[in-house]
Length: 445
Image 1 (cartoon, one colour):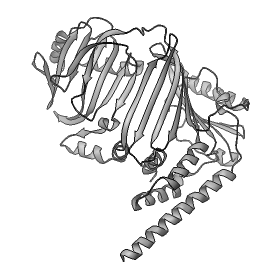
Image 2 (tube, one colour):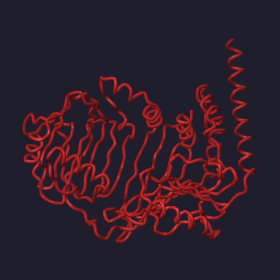
Image 3 (cartoon, helix red, strand yellow):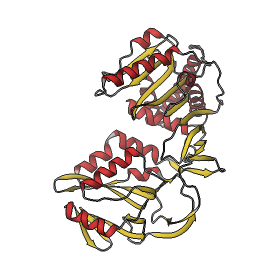
Image 4 (cartoon, helix red, strand yellow):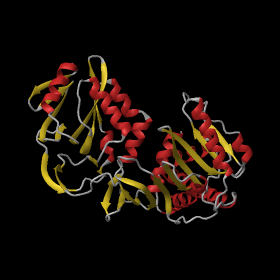
């Protein structure tokens, strides 16, 4: 029986390789190649534009799958089920051409859209969108889809419809400067709080890693001089994700502002921060499920703040928070330690004695460490157990556990420009393109 099992396994791999070769030939010759740059159809003032070179992505995936990867029986079954899934239908979209995702702003509301070349206009016209206000337009060669909130106003729907008509009525220039190795290009306009504006970021995948290279302009309203800041010098654990940033985005700050108001805290605006994330704890506090982040966090404000007086007011207004002493608060079963480290800087976190030192440096955005730390979820109740087994969390954990190196940081290049360098690397032998494909297919089945 063992001998027959080896034979069957060999045949399965042989059939799998043959199947991928057939797909490769089909994708190469079945659809006409459009060399027009779809991004040219969009106005220059888009908030975010992401262009994906799916042709190069498919070729990279096929080469890595055929020549650089060994599959287990379960992985072969996953790939087979994924390729046979009805969800993989193209609906007339040219799947091996350029695909563009973009965000447009109308009255401070972002509208998400997709732009692609059309291989079969009849099939594209049969595509049904989920949202009742979603918009689909085509000129026979290019198609655009806009995702509109179900509660959108008539004015917003009118604007979005006119925008879609303008996009498909415009003719591409036919010029493209896409690097063959480049799989993704992102353009980000930025806002008044962004350190970097007019950013262009390119992404490449090779073997086990993703490489990011980008450049943009400095925000002239912000200071980029080196100053003395209190910084974490090292993390207390081996597995953590470090985030350093400046101003919080408006949407995120509004969330914090709402929470602060609810619990009776009135703090100045955050100017910059450094955070180590270790995971999350889920607790049942007085019959209510509460998500408590496990982190160490240095917050810097644009004016003087007194943490003791703020926590006194919070303790009186918010019954879930208890001040144990002059350095410790407790929420449910979790303790957080806090410290005033300067007139405009405070520390709060799960480490009683964090390693903090004064350092002369620039505060530039960065993210490094182990992304899997974010999904380290602890808890004894049924909610915690349920969250750990739902596909979104479980599958993401599987992928993130293979990340061996993660570093995306900003470099002060000169008086006008900032540069972004990044690398995301998987464990040796784990091809990035294949692992990403398997990750996506986990949700397709």
